[in-house]
Amino acid sequence: MTKHKMKEEIPREPYTKSTLVIQIVMTLVAVLFIAPILIIINYSFKTKKELYLSSPLALPQSLQFANYEKAFSKLDLATTFTNTFLYTAVSVLILALLCGSTAWAIARCRAKFFKFCYIYFIVGILIPYQALFLPIYIIGYNLNLTNTRYGIIFMYIATGVSFGVFLMNSFMSTVPLELEEAARIDGCSVFRTYFTIVMPLLKPAMATLVIMQAFQIWNDYLLASLYVSKKQLKTLTVAIQSLFSAQTSDYTTAMAAIIISVLPIAILFISLQKYFIKGMTVGAVKG
Image 1 (cartoon, rainbow, N blue to C red):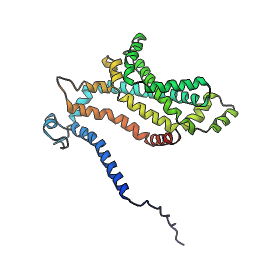
Image 2 (image 1 turned 180 degrees about the horizontal axis):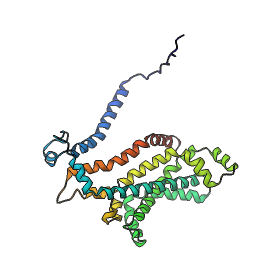
Image 3 (image 1 turned 180 degrees about the vertical axis):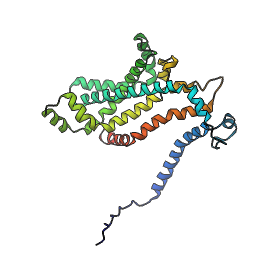
Image 4 (image 1 turned 135 degrees about the horizontal axis):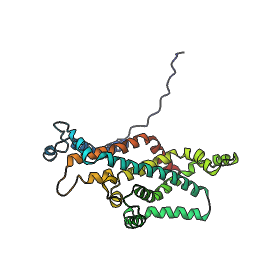
């Protein structure tokens, strides 16, 4: 007998014409999605002359890292990046905790009040986001929440809680009731049951919620521009918009600024990608 065990051969599916067509279509779709990103990266290293005279696919004659230096100074990155990170991190953290506990209460309680609450949150998703801007601003102005950090964080939470509860509620069927009943028999309180038993099982759902809400808040322009006018409170997207004006437009610097703004959220997605894919799959099957 040999020391090495024979590996079992995994049967492969026959390579058909339909498989080839699907692969070609998916490759074309991937190229269409990645092409604008590559063009933006390419433009961020070009001079203004190359931007207007050369082809979008033509490589720069020399890498212009000065565009990134100008982007750092023009965006006031120390301020705008800190503001954007603060708004996103705090809002997403509170949304994850709030939506998870709310969805758990709705899923486990059979009273009509909780069913009404779930329908109420669903209705919140159906209302267009832009239709809420005027009442949001009026409420914020009357409560002295405009031009304040906690004000814009509160508004991000208010506009994201409906989708968060809907998303988290669809994952509650994956949490076995037997674990909660066993914890209750052992004397666990409601809070301890949720934070030690239920919440660890909701990691894929939490990761999905964190990524989707972080994308929306980090890239938001409308609410940030509506609620904040002070320079020291502005976000990255609002600062980037200032590079595109009717009088002068510094596109190469703007492209460099876009790359800088995308990097943190791309790192977040790569870090939570495993949980995000698992969460989306579980939600599709169980939800």
